[in-house]
Length: 401
Image (cartoon, rainbow, N blue to C red; front, side, top):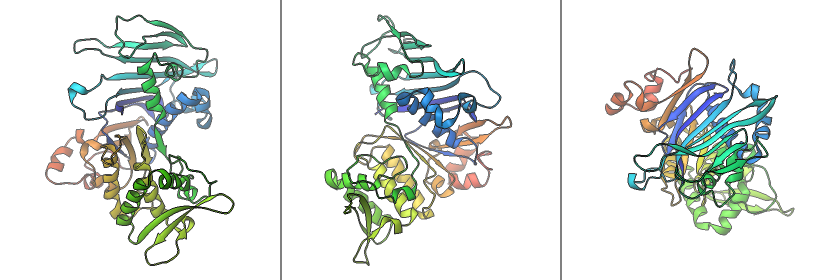
């Protein structure tokens, strides 16, 4: 499954010019309120929405482009991905070429448009990078075929709609498998904004494969797992029993008016109780395990502050669950994971290369650095210090309010 190696965002609100270089399978972003963590997640969501509904519709819930653009700035906002189509950690000989996807968005007579879009890669050990898709204001060229070469013939491209990314249209054509791969990759990203009260809703009956962003279809996903993947559901419940003592069973039951309710069975009690009586923490842990053990997981999973509502002793376990999911230890394909957190208990469970520390500099814009690249941090870790303790002691010299 593809994975992002580097991510650059320019002129997107507080992300004036931010690059996360050397992303890992499991990544956690730490920083004070207002430093840009949520904005980073939103930039990824914005890119995904541009692909499915176009720039104009993706902008609607975020305001006009002028409101999305970094304060005091003019000109286009940019999102750039450097990614590989092979899984993270494969041997170098089997590693696929590094591909750069560049998207530049600006305005024309007050209307948002895609100004520039390209895909670039390098073929061969001694080759130079070249663009096999290059579009400017709806006009450009593409090199078709599975393995585009610089010497291959370029096909002209003209797009009717300059608010839709070229990869959205060209990625549907079998003759452009590299473009199609990127379209599928971005289209599979999952950003979780789980809301316990939403998961307590009583939805219309019907199995659904994947958990929605806010979790209101949790009973439908439980129904799907119980019908088609009972072994996965048993494993989820087994892990839940280890984390929530006494919890025996979770079922999705259909009501007389053809709706679904979740019921939780505690060991000491004969009758299960409704999800509306379950604690936020129990619901969140259950939803996260459902998300992480999805039989067909997304390529990228983003979760904001998963520690909210959970007991501190569960946080190192949850971090291990995220890491195991990212490394494919649940028997499924690997999923790259990006999480934000404020919890030292969660941070303590991380490796230095998995932790990214954000703050706002004196100019008001965000900066980010991987913790193993901060001065002194590797030495402290070698001496047995934990990342959460180093953060609280101010050793990062950033990431604090």
